[in-house]
Amino acid sequence: MFSPDRIREIVEKGLPGSRAEVKDLTGTSDHFELVVIAAGFDGKSLVDRHRMVYATLGALVGNEIHALSIRALTPGEAGGR
Image (cartoon, rainbow, N blue to C red; front, side):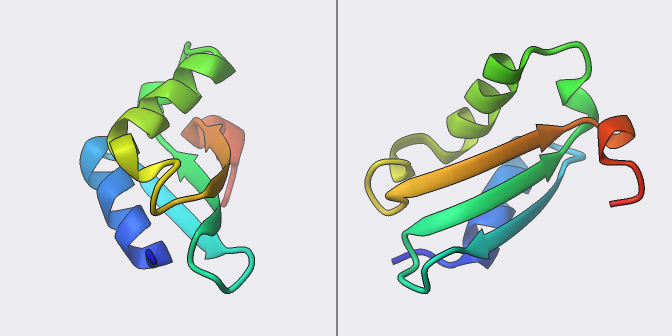
């Protein structure tokens, strides 16, 4: 089982300058919603943004993290979030 805080730490370390918000969707610590805000997403397609996020989490996805919903936004897209 994995905690939202641990996922946030991994993503923010893997995508320097990013800010991540993670919610445990089911209370079982294996289904999460992740919002990542990063300037590095600028000019990238949605698929490329998701690949960048998945690359930070590696083998955790599909193992410790059973399901993951991702919103990957640039700071401009996130507005005041």
